[in-house]
Image 1 (tube, one colour):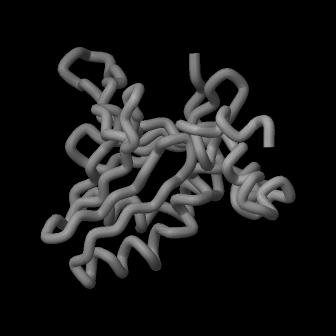
Image 2: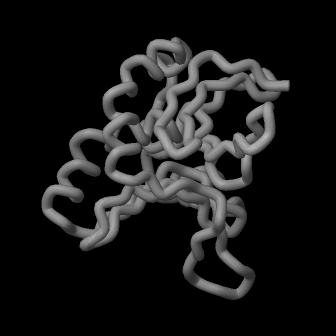
Length: 173
């Protein structure tokens, strides 16, 4: 069972929760089924590692807000096939897991993730400080691209988080 450190209601049965899962802190953006007396997590959502959440907080207010204001399409990689996408003429912020089918060059999106509506995104921005205060481990997290093994391109290509679909092709270099 996972222990919840903090829970923020984003409206529409959607929550962002800081939870302990298998001894590791995770940030869970998920839709919950409240039809029964007890709320149950649905598959609609994504669970972010501390590194992925750190990447998200780094791009949250500046880059994502800028794309929304300019009405331009942008995509950011959080690591391990999780992407944040803002589409042109769409005010939503999509945080979603992608998957690359065998023998295809491009990764395709999956059902795992949430498309945050403008109101939900604003609530997330309002509570980001509260969420990060419940994650003291976040201060020691170094983004993947700033680690010593990423000082050259081969280091990045060997990384399972930065290059999740092809990292095994670079192990012999």
